[in-house]
Length: 405
Image (cartoon, rainbow, N blue to C red):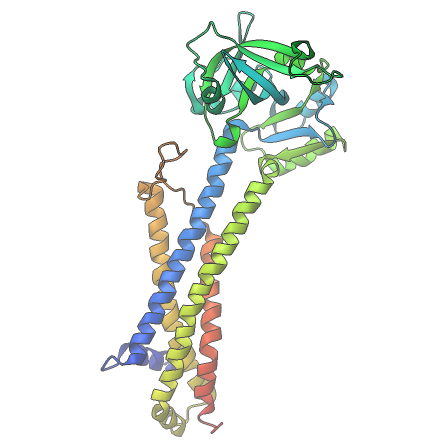
């Protein structure tokens, strides 16, 4: 028989009356359980928010983007496009020319982000899921169309049903002094609004237009672009394709994936996740300190039992292990219950969405959550570490009673 766990279980479960020490042990167990549950839930919410942002970016951004390290534009001749297309894993290439411009519609005007794209752009994105009104159309029967974000529609009171009112896009001509009172210094393109889309507020100032329109507006040469957007084949290894593309395009251009383009946002989410995790870890630490006091008082209460066990031949290691096991029972019982409850709450939220975002304009109805094994293991390791630290000193004190120190 393993004597230390047996005696520890007797101390924890077989008390004839509930003393203050017993209630303190239960309080410690509940504190560890609540802290563990909260840590699992909060970490899963941050994981869900990170995954939600990735899904949002996937709607509008390509798998990989090639852009110049210096400047806003670069030459993308047919030879370069052929080399990029020949890289294993590349499915399609979309040439893009984008910059800020002035948009006018009826009596309103606002600054927009004009994004001129190839005809294949609408086939390479999931923009249809973000369409609010109208249709996805950039060119038909020689007419150039625009797809505008909901923020632009709100600023200019645009209606896709009104085909008689054009959307005018103006951009300053190169080499001319900007003067808002002189209309001759602006290049101008006239578009018909075909549809309205909404993804997220960061994209609310975008206007999608044919690539030729944007090139004429920005005075780009026939082979100049702002970026090349690369769509990968299903199952392609993104990191491998990224490295291969970087070798092909050379050092003057930079290949980035969606995470690279939104690095600041992901960094902010992870920093917030870290600080919240540290805060909740401190709550678990407070509960673990209760274990320290509980075991310390238990050592005093069981002083006579300890002396009897020493008289019967118990060793210092046996006495120490009894109280270490007692602390482990208190902490791990709470941690196990907290893990089960936390995982259960996250699974229920994923399935039924009990906790809503509380906003009618939110992208999703309920708070997104995503369980990750690493977070669960990290939480369990944290509880074990704190249990050892807070149980060691009372256990060492109990072991020292047999030597008279």
